[in-house]
Image (cartoon, rainbow, N blue to C red; front, side, top):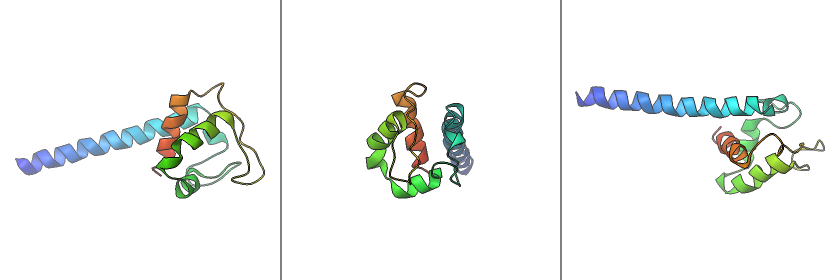
Length: 102
């Protein structure tokens, strides 16, 4: 009985985590971030996996501001456009935290 309960709990936890990851990917798609970024490859901007390799959780405030205000110089010469008109601070932070898990 304990084994069945343990398996059920682990399965439920896995579904919650994968559902959360999907929700954040869906948010990035809804906010059109995937137009310039993909999980595994760069398009106009770097891939999300490359961003995750370069930054840590300590960089969340800086990266959140970059999503909102835009920026340039860290990944080449093409600037990232500001997104503060379409993305809230909470949404930006949620996406940044998701990206850093990749």
